[in-house]
Length: 205
Image: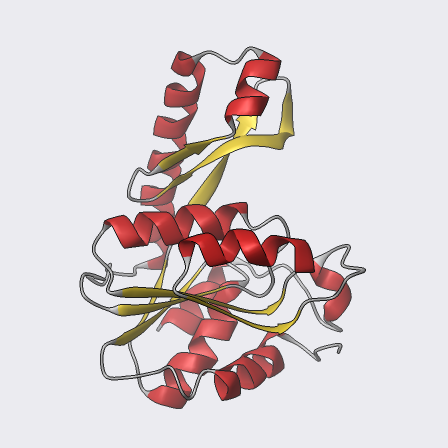
């Protein structure tokens, strides 16, 4: 299935969520791509919407390769195997994590979005697609630690091999498709343009 754009994918995902949504539900997007999806779901069910940031911690030797990630609440995940193999110091990880947390704080200010208290809420964590699952795993674990009642991971597309990892941290994983030949999220969208900050701000209003 190829989606016309993120809004169409959001409508189809919203259809699948109807039996899960209740009065304690909040939809939370991983920015930026998850924001249009979350907007559609929030509008459909008249539930609150928020965003949740996760930033990768890059290898000191290759900025494109992640050795971990940090959530906006300070939850840090480190791939211990990569850390040992590359001989990465704990001090480096902490320094980069602090920088990323500051970047997240600045970005939330730009988006002018007050955080919603997710304690005792049923949180629907959404993105426009899942590739490795690392960001979703960190976000789900962090939100659970903050006291969410349940965490649902929902997305239009994810590779089959990451589903079991997602199920370890989520109460429920809801996906429209799990192709065996997955290569990249963008291949499942006709329009997969990179959202800019202005588009995100407009959707969050």
